[in-house]
Image (cartoon, rainbow over all chains, first blue to last red):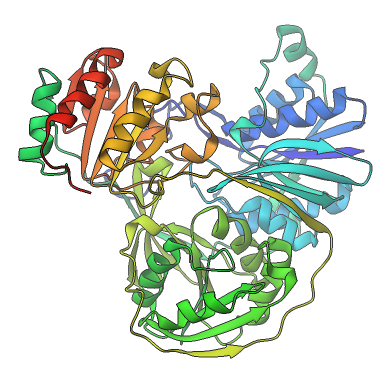
Length: 249
Length: 317
């Protein structure tokens, strides 16, 4: 079987982002970037399935500017076999990303597509579900356990009420939760080997799909700041403040 | 010009967040219609019709909709979306799961997790874990929007009498199957709607020690939350997680115990009205957003907190 895993380059999750004064977005110059965290879980799960012998090939794909290739290299360094970089220098909405991924799926014909459940920059949580709908495939979102069978997958999903188990026929789209697995680090020899693995290049606007953004970002601003609070000396003072000052208990 | 809102329910009753979504929908357009898709869900349709802000209920009852499989639900929503300019649902694991499938089928770009309606086409939504707010304008003719329930008040539940129309089911693809749902049963209030939330983090050091949190929660009639670190460590189940990829809560009082305050945790609770932090590390980032900070060993502070609460004559419920 074959897996396509989609990875996105985002501002590192540890970075405190800064909003631009002119309201046009957030600062990205000289800011540490890395792979979207749940995308690392998607790669890790693909590699585990390959190690189990059921999967023969993993193809890692990213969409973005030249630097986005770093995320594909990282996936190659932990076990993906080859990469695809769909070049775009401008932001593309999840709808457009899903259309591009559909084109890649039609070419690569994977049995499964793995993605992170949500990108931590635009927080949209849409791409995997949209891709599944466009392909007319089933989906398993927010997955925290994946069991691959011959023609289907049994998946445990994290939902607001607890856990849900579904079975989806292959081919299928899986979006990964952070608790699905513990992503491994790439070893130095594997990082060196990954440099020799092939990355195919494509250009987003040449793929024949409409990737015009339909949602216009009018402005980006900082959320209202909380005003600084106080430190209390002990528990008795805390309870007294909550009772008499904040009046919440 | 009207809004189709997809109700979340358990086939018996509406889920509370549907009422918040109805409020948001009514701010987009007062002509709010609610689609109830379920199995044996007559009472849900009646509850939706009783909400005064709801002008019409579309009810589709079929075993295919019993478990809200997105592969089954999305074609139904798409089928009945023709007359509507907006398709709306809650931005929780229910809405997040099926709505992008509807948007893809309609070739429309979804606007996720809005916290404010500026006009029928312009919305405010948090990005970067709530560290920035984006004002966005949708140029699509038909708009798929998910709303953050805690940013809107719940709509009044009774007094209305909207018409209930039975509507046709849609074809289902039969390539996915519901197996089971393991819901965490609790006597405490629901995390998403509780007036008080007491949350524990890595500082609790074990699942057993969450008893200290539970005792306080029981005393205050509060829900129990947790940081991702505590859930990852196996101290408590995932449905308690507060944060960017967990639940967003806006209680009157949020008590963070042994939680350092990672960006992704703050994203889930920093809109709370009053925030209390109890942490032995005085430099922990959680203190920078806390109204009341107590720098103390939680294993001493929590039993003391409980005994101080026990001394009070009255506690608000």
